[in-house]
Image (cartoon, rainbow, N blue to C red; front, side):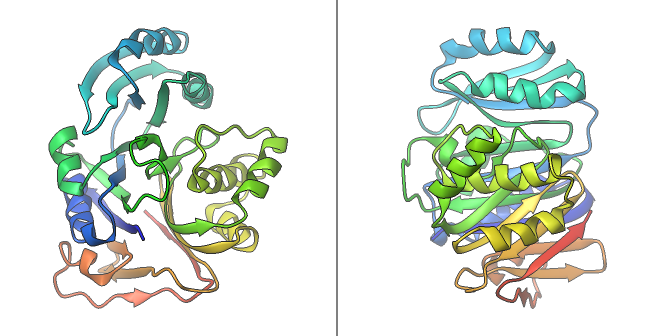
Amino acid sequence: MCGIAGLIAKDSPTLGNDLINMLKELIHRGKDATGVALYENRDTIDLRVSMTAAQFRKDLEEVIKGYGQISKARIYQGQGIFTFYEVSVDMDPARISGLNWAIDSHPNICVHSLGQHIKVYKDEGSAEELQNCHKIPPIQGTHGIGHVRLATESVENINFAHPFISYIYPELAIVHNGQFTNYFNMRRKMENWGVRFKTNNDSEMAAHFLAFQMKEKGLDLEAALHLGLETFDGVFTLLVSTSNQIGALRDRLGIKPMLYFEKDGTTVLFGSEQICLTPIVSDVYATEMDPGGVQVWSV
């Protein structure tokens, strides 16, 4: 089933905790995995990866050193079999996409986020378990999106969990409820475009498709989402974030829910159910997106 949530709250000092609390209200929609993509006010380029074993840290750092200087490294064990590594990299921002794919080319390492604002935390289990294990710190942030997962494929491979990012447009992240029935056809078509894939998850396809349209074709987020609506088959809702926007997409059948609520022109809440909005605004009456709806909010 899965559940998605999102939050725009400019200069929030509690962004991470707020999004985690929203996801706690969706635990009944899936607890195989939980993840958040947070957008921070910071001056560093930060990288987060998963590794199948801590021994691959040496390989990872050798790749990073080809692009920049490492500082503030943190390595720790996740909920399941994966080891997580977080680091700041002093590097040319224009080379972020190249570093992202250079790391993803390693069979035992997967980039979860790499950018000047974005930071992704995802792991097996519930939102509470994610917070307890990863110790997501208080941050000065602007917005974020999150996901609770009811897995329909490999549960133990956390790289198949959401949010998904794209090496093509590193500050973009998506969370997705549903399935794309034309995934394999779309993947083959995109591989002919030169797009490379790390997993077999259909949500990665959507992330790369939107990123490609924005980076290579020059579309803005709203236009890319409209093109996605015309291109993707299946039943689905998407929340898509960049460093300065959140966009929502609901397919024309409208089977998968998407609600939003705006308050005082400064806060916007998104979710699969109204209950997940109440940790932020207790007295909330949300609007449900129309089937076939596309909307974009700026931060």
